[in-house]
Length: 84
Image (cartoon, rainbow, N blue to C red; front, side):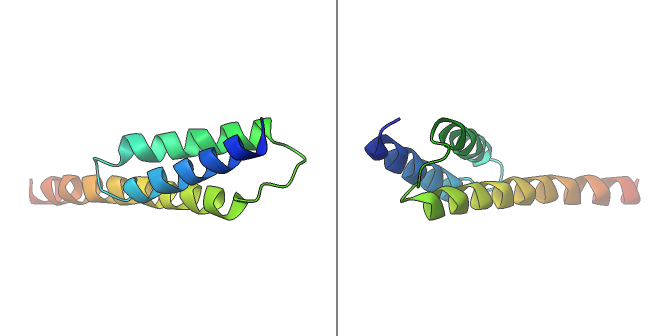
């Protein structure tokens, strides 16, 4: 994988991680960001990635977005169970 492709995919993961912060709608971009991160790290191993910060931030934002979606789904379920 050449350097330009690695930078482009790292920035794509970052942008998808930002969109992944939207509860429920961000599930697909967050998943794509995590898959892109694993793909870039597997294919570009051992060489310096100039956009590694964006790649890692994108994955972190994606994980945060998935966590927000799970919590946003769990709160109404728990409220429903305790009111039942």
